[in-house]
Length: 516
Image 1 (cartoon, helix red, strand yellow):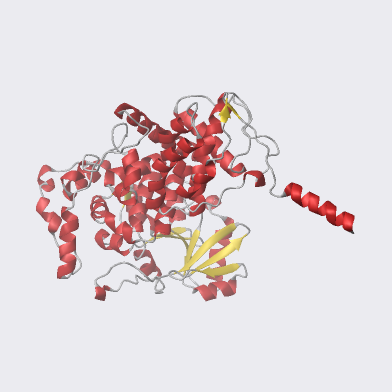
Image 2: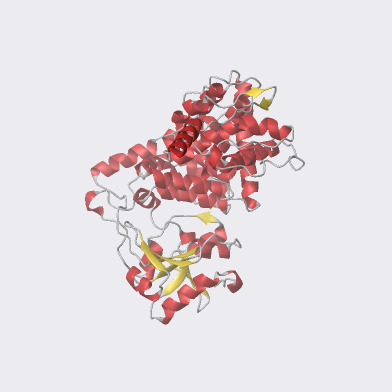
């Protein structure tokens, strides 16, 4: 039985587990922290599972807050750190109506129930800090050894219960460099369209985690290969798929059966020709009893073919005239994803807006920074590339406007950095910092060194002077940029900022003083 390095366990998480145990409750470290410690990675956070109810947890910790409706959790605060503590739960699925989607998740159960209701075997491991042993109810240790991402139980059921697990499977496979187990891979592809049932904020948050986890390039490759990217955003799929991309939809185009061969190859398992010849098995009934309607749907999904760049209308941008130019921009977008991973590996924490700028920037920056380009032209290009992405991913209004401002700020950042000049405020310090970071990533992706360039920000930049505009989305920001400063001989032309009614207020004040 493997033993974790005690020095790597967070002291506050250890304290929470031990206090719960002293008060007669079972309590373990659980989930991602156990998985990461077993594979030699530093956990991002530590979670605790316990037999204590949320109210019992709150009674033991004054620094505790109960959160959530669908899933009641106890957050134990230690300064800025949160130790998320959940009660053992059982699977809440009710089969009577034939709908597997989980809408409530507060059915308490035993530790075994709790392990079996989790998504993947590698996330279903418990660690007893007092006995210093790993508790495995779901075969997670064997899958860690085999480097496989496998659902707990029937993958067809698990992905229908919560389709967000499709994105999580891709995230774990990319982040810790595991293969997806063949049956899990088959079900992932079959049920990928179920993601549309999930709340958009949950989907978007998982997309941010894919980009911010240090494996954005590999995550995008898997999204393309499985056809999930097309479900998330057909526009983003059109930007990243095609000539110049390192990844294409896999041989799954011939049916779900081909995905098994792909998954076997990824896992290093040699497939047998006879065992691969099972195309008719794709229509087989799932292990659980299904009614006629469910069986009909299962056949549809099993026979569904993944869309490809050849069946989807080709990407057409008004400012990209040649196929070779589009291919170059697409290649730069993938190179930027690699640079994003390196940035995160250095300990940087990019904003959500910057991460969404990355796949867009190579397609628009040339237009935005072209000599003689006007603000309206730059905005039109940004909206043409960015608005469909914002709409399809349901990006928050503030983040969408910041994306527009960051890309528009490249009009000043690119010429200023290349001439080693300081950059004036435009859209606030956060926008400029994102823009400078984006510029540096693009330069590194192109193989150019940025270490000798001048500081990006002028000392004492007033954030309030360049406050972000309140646009509802990318499109609403276009009008606000029309009056932006024009470039004169490569230099931004300075304009005096006049305060509304300033002279009138001073004159009126003087009159009142004289009258008194």
